Length: 138
Image (cartoon, one colour):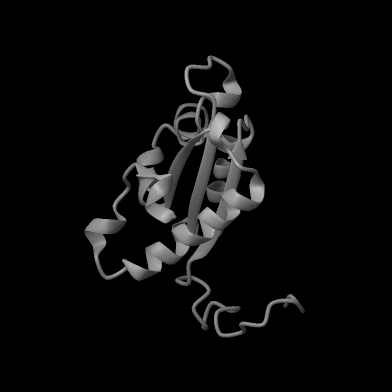
């Protein structure tokens, strides 16, 4: 048991550890390792259906560098051609690298994304995999 984890109810299988969501927030700035991070999160999870990933993807539009190729697209292309199995677990907001305001700003937007998911959890149509814009969480 982790001494820093205060919530014991979901710490065991009997307590809900197989159903309670695990949220992973990624503030990605022109990051070539982001697709690998997504792969490792799903591939190494005991129950990947519990993993929910939110990404602020800050890339340079029109760039042909691999750093700007996009996390989800590269994950599907390079790591999991059957990525549709996790499409409902990943939500990405795209920001131009030129407009990026740093990791703290991106992380605050990511937290708002998770809160938005909880607010709309009773509206399944609102939670379908869809392109979202940064202004949706401001």
